[in-house]
Amino acid sequence: MAGNLSVDRERALAIGGFDENFIGAAYRFETEFCHSPGRRQAATIWFEPRASIHHLKLATGGLRSFGDHRSTASPVHSAGDYYFAILHRPRSGVTP
Image 1 (spheres, one colour):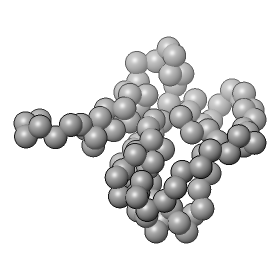
Image 2 (cartoon, rainbow, N blue to C red):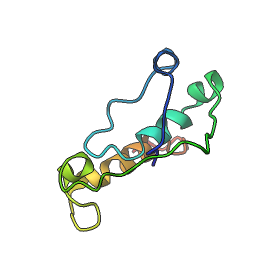
Image 3 (tube, rainbow, N blue to C red):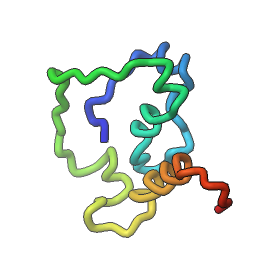
Image 4 (spheres, rainbow, N blue to C red):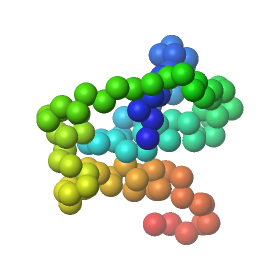
């Protein structure tokens, strides 16, 4: 997960932006953004070790809107993983 992900908006949009089909908790949206072959060729990904994030530990909001991922059976916590797998599955000529 990319809690510290930051992008230059103009450059990100120029190479296709984020896939808005990732919904709910949207797990893997950032992986897909970095993984797509066309985007990999169009830009360089840099790691910035000084980047940080401060979690507020609030009782509501954010991912909590979809239930606790550790104790809920809500599909919003796995839909992104499945969507990513479908997008990037090996192409063997077999149709799903």
